[in-house]
Length: 236
Ligand SMILES: *Cc1c(COP(=O)(O)O)cnc(C)c1O
Image 1: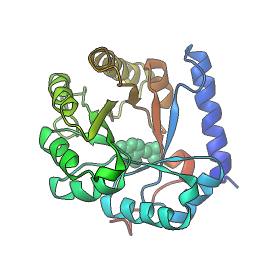
Image 2: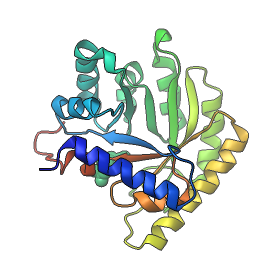
Image 3: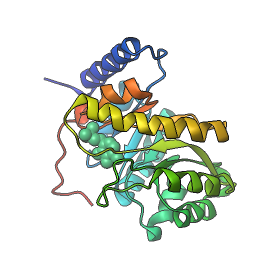
Image 4: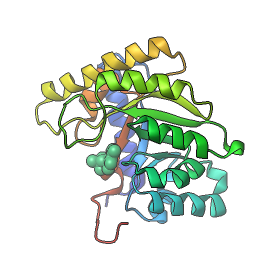
């Protein structure tokens, strides 16, 4: 039987192999475990196997998990990343509970997260969600808009701009995946040259992790390959 622990070991092996293959430094790619729709026990199993960074897409579900782990397993010192779409009326629980937000796509959301961040929590670590494939249906903003939003975020004291996140269009060929990821890498280098604290390029999921690492990802977001297929019938 595949366990969460053996799945994590397998993914770490794949990340290490890709780092070596593409001349990336060892441990330059972090693993974000995407635990959306999965129970606390699955997160606990991953923690016991050494995983400390988790991604959640739904506000209420994520906040419930964060509070459970603060109450019962605070010693794990988990870092929680919000990676889902953000409605402006949901910014407060995100800013009050999460450590990172990957999915900022407009100034209004950035401003609200900044204003609602509790003073004792330190700055919220944030990424701008970019969409280089230009499809109206996908979330994320254009390259030019991202450059403008970076300047807005840089002026907000309770947010620290750490980089970019993207979910490229679902394309089958490796070459197409690589092309989309390389565009993000170029924008990342441009933004990094302006804001020296920028160090995180969140791209790559279960199906396109290798191309993302070749192009320069520093954080891959993996759900299914760690926790198994998701059942959405009781998600919020
Ligand atoms: C669900 C999700 C993932 C993980 O996807 P898998 O295909 O299960 O690895 C990564 N990033 C985002 C933004 C997601 O919503």
